[in-house]
Length: 307
Image 1 (cartoon, rainbow, N blue to C red):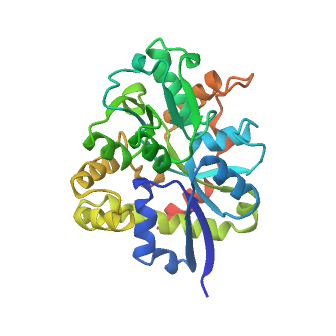
Image 2: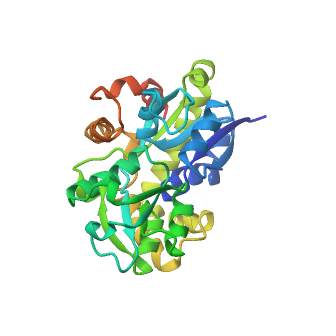
């Protein structure tokens, strides 16, 4: 009997390698049965993980940093440890059609996942470079990208941060992009694969099994021969992606500046960018520089050798 592996991830196109590994039976080959939950927010993800309800966490690198440093949005300790990279990730700020630049956000209400997460810091950087104080914009925690994008579409908020496919959906609907990690930074570590230190200690074989299956799904996804099949799978798993947007979403996923990272490699410079943003906007006293304290890449190395 396959062991159930509980995975929690943010909704988004970067989950395609997981979808592929599930669809192709790669998890089953490792003796694992995938139980995938899509989180409504980073707070929910951290609470569920801290409560022992999740084994593998597909999350933003900054979330692993925040909770390790005691700067999480809620007072829990998920004991995150990053075991592999996932995406460079192009985080964009989309705004209502009438809002042309960041300075137009003065006096407006903006939707964020939480106010002290790395993606929020990307927004703060956009404001800073435009000479806009955070005090000039009202910030509301709304949850993960689907909820935030819906609130912007409905006119409840002036704008929000998005990842694919929601950025392409916004562009197609006439919304404006006021800035993105791709244009702001040379490198930005967006998504990572993490687990908890207790689960890793108890079940290293399951973690490595997940990584091997994910890497096979990643290789299949990145193989240009499978482009049409991968797009079809993504459309089936994320039906909100309209046919006219799927090509742009796939282009972003395949782009080394915004998409999936071959071999699940980490981006050291991108992680330094994340630490710099948290040092400046996270409210802590220390300047964070050591990425190694959040990582255990030995299991990724073993999974790659086994592949």
